[in-house]
Length: 338
Ligand code: P6P
Image (cartoon, rainbow, N blue to C red; front, side, top):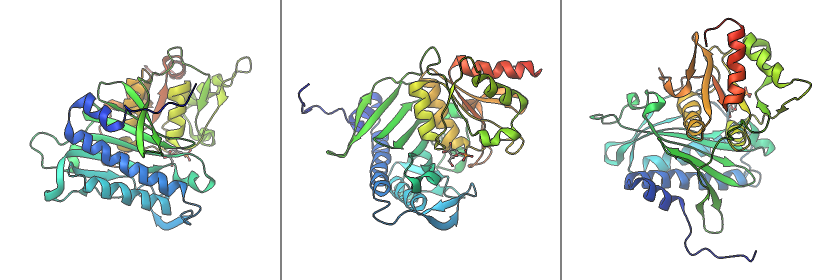
C-alpha cells in the first residue's frame, strides 16, 4: 500500500481531551508523555553517552540504582512538579513522597516507577515506565494520604515500554485500554491500538514467572506451574524480568504472569502503588484478572488492596480466567477456601 501522509494525526493530547474534556488531565498526560520522550532519548543514547552502569546509590527497594534510574527519575519529577497540575509525587527511586510547592500544585497525585526493570538496561533488554494517577481527596491540599488508597480511587493508569518501538498503554478508570506508539519523526505518541482486550479464551499458553524463587513458593503455586509444564501440552515459559515487557506480552498474547507471595517475600516483591495497581487496572479493564493469589488467608483483587505505606508490596497473579482459575484450583486442592 502506498505510503500515506496523515493530516489528521490521532495524538495522545487529542485522545485525552476527547475522552475526558479535562484540560488538567491533558496537561498531566502531556507532562508524562514528554518525560517519557526524554527518557527514550536517554535510554537509546545510553551507550553513546556512557549512561550504563551503577550510580553508586540504592533505592527504596534496596536495588542498586543505575545512572539511568536517577536520570529518568529526575526527568519525571521535574516534568510533573512543573506541570502545574500535581501536588504529591511518589517514586520508587525516592524514599519519601515529593510535595509540590503551593505555587505550582494542582489536583493530581502521581505514583511512578520511572525506569522499571532497569537491571536489564546495560544488556539492552526492554525496560519501562509505570504510573498511576489519583486526584486529591476532597478538601485535601495534597498529602501522601491521597495516594494511600485502593486502586478503586485510581483515575488513570499506564505504562511505557522502551523496546523496538516506544509504546504507551493506558486507561482511565472504567474505560477501555488504548496503545500509542511514539512517532519519532514528529515526536508524538500516536494512537495505534484501540480497545486492547485480553484474549477471551486465555490466549497463548504462556506462563511468566521467576522460577528461581520456586523453593519458597506455596505448594499451590508450585503445583500450578507444574501443570503448565504438562508434558502432553506444555506452556511456553517466557520471563523478561521487566514487568512492563512481561505484562505487555501477557495482555496482547495471553497466558499468565505470576509474582506471588512466598516464604522469602510474604507480601510479594512488586510495589502496589506504581506496579500492582496500574497493571491491575489495565489488565482488568482489558478483560483479564488481577489477583493477589492467596494473600493473608484469602484470594483478593489487587485493586482492593489499600497501601499502608507508599512503597507497600503486593503479590500479583495476572492473566485470563483459564489460567488464573487453574491456580485457584490448586489452592482449593490444598484445602484453602477460594
Ligand atoms: P526478579 C524489576 O526490578 C521488577 O520490579 C519488575 O520489573 C520485574 O518484573 C521484577 O522486578 C523482576 O524481579 O526477582 O524476577 O528479578
